[in-house]
Length: 172
Image (cartoon, rainbow, N blue to C red; front, side):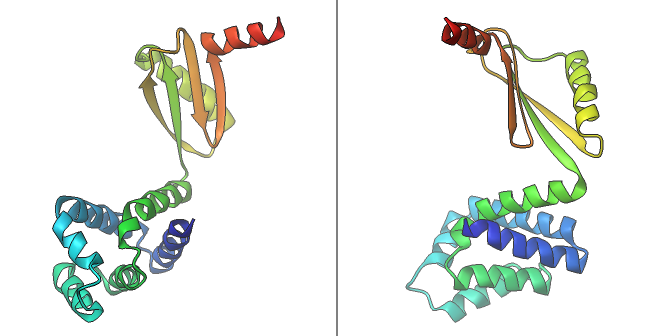
């Protein structure tokens, strides 16, 4: 996916410039502006407007960005990739969290988990991922009759009643 490549290139520049936090802030600001001002995005994507005019607009509107990030933004515009900025931001955010040692864990349950249960899961997962700062997000799904599903680091652990019943059904 080409958006990953853009995000990786920006992240590498951010590490080099020692501005990984700042560039994440810039991406947040940029995506918010483009979401709120849809006409501005259409203007920057329009084939009817000369590229030099688009770049001048970007210089005026985003003069708060440093030169490296502004060059990155202009590259996206030149390559007609500005409409992919949300995906690029998500990919950058993933790289940022990995770099900072953050690991997101999604826990799907039939009811909202108590703080005690989340703390218990945190301790168990901390043993498995000792060098990571865990962020546990609880998603409620009433289709999971009982138990939980844990999705973490590209792996899924399904300890739900639905899964257990399916395994029993398969074995019969």
